[in-house]
Image (tube, rainbow, N blue to C red; front, side):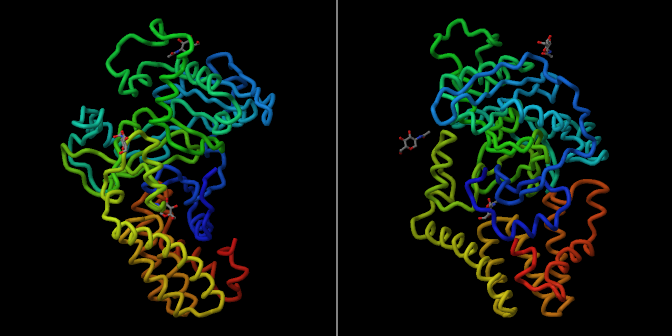
Length: 434
Ligand SMILES: *[C@@H]1O[C@H](CO)[C@@H](O)[C@H](O)[C@H]1NC(C)=O
Ligand SMILES: *[C@@H]1O[C@H](CO)[C@@H](O)[C@H](O)[C@H]1NC(C)=O
Ligand SMILES: *[C@@H]1O[C@H](CO)[C@@H](O)[C@H](O)[C@H]1NC(C)=O
């Protein structure tokens, strides 16, 4: 699971948002929203055996996890790449209901899908000087446009990494890739391997002991932490992993509820020729952890946030710390019914969050302020903040698409907000404390 404690405000967002399953600018959604995952509305009729290959299993031999079994389950007709899960048998059975996770349905209205497909994809993969590859826009991409979709190809239970030794892990990973539709498409993600053609599953030149090293390194440098079918995993989305990191990205990632598919949306308009970027990091992390996280992806952090002069970096870290501290303090003040102080602190946080460009936190903060103003009896100001919450949530894709999104009227958002603090509900008992 996420290494971060879920915040109190997480509960608030979770209440506000119906079908959410998204992340804003970050790749690990867990600490923002923990949606109670339910089977998709059009459930995949779980066939007895959706797997295209006989499951291949390995048992842990380490003392702590002795006998735990992890297997490769492949369905080579799922998504554009096929999908291999390295899961425990029980999780694999559970996962069958999440396999029918078409990103077209999760992220686009029919009209948007048509437009995207009629006009053609607005991006291409190119060589980027100084980086291996990257993705650039081939036409203007509008702000908040959803322009790139992908589905996971290899998904590995985080537990497998600990339970199995590395040779076992590598063998499972190699098989997981071998069984996909076009294994070379995955192997080409390795800079070292790019361009060597015709290597689909044939590793003649590789030593026996090297088996799976390539796949292991590809997962290490390209996979994202992601909750897939309710399992904490490392997941490889081949197309999306071509998109490079930036500290101040122009796009962000949305995950589907099932976690199998994802989409990239633009934070702002992107001009033709401009490189598409997303943030690989949790902006909530102080700079030291940030640098550590980035080094996992095989590059040093040279973006502004990491290379800020020491005092500016300290200022940024301080803001992040303060934002977190304010959050607890606001709740405390609200409980003590010191609404004015709570509001003042909330407004201070809004400014700091804007400086840190953490939009998901901003929706939380606006909702919080709406609630506080409502509690104070100033419905007009509450509505102003409610509108800002609603607007931002919708723009960021949290309210779903099409009809689902339309049905999320401001009143409904306000009602959810009001329902938390309204008369008769003491702060202590409010779900906010949950
Ligand atoms: C899927 O797997 C089956 C069974 O191994 C194989 O016969 C089939 O050719 C594969 N399909 C694709 C598209 O790779
Ligand atoms: C925003 O801040 C929260 C809390 O610190 C963090 O969990 C989240 O990843 C951040 N998101 C972005 C986009 O920075
Ligand atoms: C990152 O920086 C370290 C220390 O300065 C260096 O040893 C390493 O080679 C660098 N890595 C990359 C990918 O540039």
